[in-house]
Image (tube, rainbow, N blue to C red; front, side):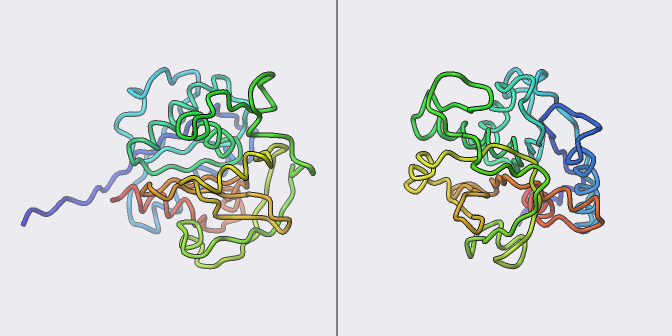
Length: 235
């Protein structure tokens, strides 16, 4: 019987426009290094500016893709290319904050048939699937209830968590109703029932959160979803 060799070094694409002043960007390398140490692997990561992504060819060879916070992106099309490539090719994927928002738009456009799906922060026409939040979540911490037996719940090992945010936009209520009949499952809600996490039911690992779980690494805490992403990348 042929044995598949264990992949010792993982290549992670960090898609977004790096800014050393963004707390999430400071936290992401720490979160990856900690997760890799727990899994006894080496994880190399490349920051890919959205302006550098012109086609799926720019993502070939990466074992996981993370579309990171700090949008609007310089080139939203580059972020959408990365999200679609991960979704269609079974590449482990994380999207946080802006990555969450763009993952929703990409899915709406290319799977649900909403070709004019739009983001209220940057678009002036189209159907707004990402809209202003009723209450800003900039530098707020909140409780999130997780759906049982989902990727995110298994990663955390519990069904109630507390995480922090830095955002003003989330899923529009009308589009939230449309998601109920799709493979993009809602896997996390806040106390008011607002969607805070989603994942694809037909994908090995595709998870997006409005909250910035990676910032826990700045406090020395393990980041369960990053460990889960790397574990999926090992496979």
